[in-house]
Image (cartoon, rainbow, N blue to C red; front, side):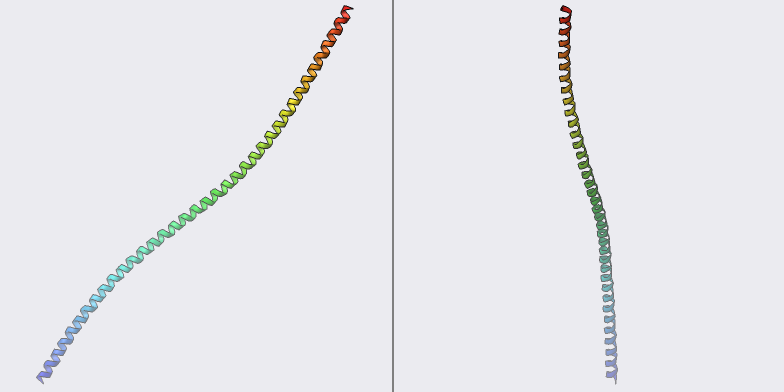
Length: 134
């Protein structure tokens, strides 16, 4: 009976040690899991921050793209206006050239008439002299 009690006591002691070891192992596992949870939490937070920065960069790029589209549109309008202004200038230069040509022709005509009038005046002066001589 004593042996049985000793054996039971030894089994109970061994079971107590086993439970103590198991408890210790469970606490170590719990600590390891908490450490892993902290690491994972830090990684999640870092990923969220990176995602936020990425979203901000995307928003900036989108704003820049819109600005570029607006600038491109403005440039197209300016190019159209320049083309229209150039056409208007070409038209005005053409009209000016025509007016200059007409003016040149009128000057030539006036010069011819002046020469004719001069000749007539000289002819009249000769006739007047001839009349005075007679």
